[in-house]
Image 1 (cartoon, rainbow, N blue to C red):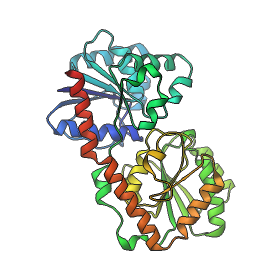
Image 2 (cartoon, rainbow, N blue to C red):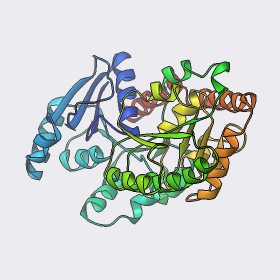
Image 3 (cartoon, rainbow, N blue to C red):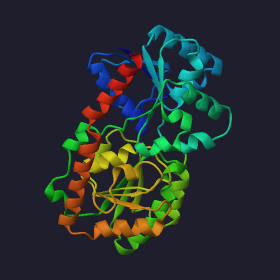
Length: 362
């Protein structure tokens, strides 16, 4: 089977991590897999050497110099040369696949990577084309069952639920019994953007640090709000407690050094970082946004859910985990690890990709 994946890049995002895992798995199983990127970057998620990688540009700077019409023409040429049986577009890659492949006969798969409600509320030309893409695709991948009813009724029959796979390495690196003794290092990971609502966490940290001054928060990620978040941290007097660490492709190493994971987003699709943190046995606290966290965490059992923008509730749950006995933290961490292993084992999830593609071709 000849499979084409399309994405803007292969760095700094949950969708990109899924692409790296899925393309590598399918290529290693013997399928002819090509990954078409808009641009290459210095730091990218790893790929199997069997995945063929094509790109419109070797850097973001080079990509910006290519006109819109030339991007479409070049993408169309590369798709035609690849001659796929089935192609899937992620994020802006879906937009590009739609506008560049008119008249080409192969199965096309779109993918929802966030709350579907957002798709129907965004305005403008790009949003209109995105909607046409979802209507014209042969299948739509959604990440959770809770996303299906948020799709337009006429699209629901095309939806297949395929969760994000947890990395096998995360499951292998689950915390040992002695690693629950202390709880001073909190970690977050995600793009520094409005969606992640880091200000809520910064305000919650004020309450945490007032009681436990030696607690620290490390935030891994890059994005447009880096400057404003750093300013807020400094204005809050938390420069010694909250550190913006930039992007890393070794998040598992960072989780291994940490005692708790927190997510403060006000919307999500299915957050990979939360899944991996739980897989490694970290006690976790997350906002209960409309899709994602409640599909992953059983509140009060293998983690905690708090209201979106609930600063006080977020601080209270963080303090509750800090004040647990090591045995209580260990129990929560083990339950989190086992829940992720049961639901999101990579071999089970990645087989669903293969089954979907094969079903479309039949």
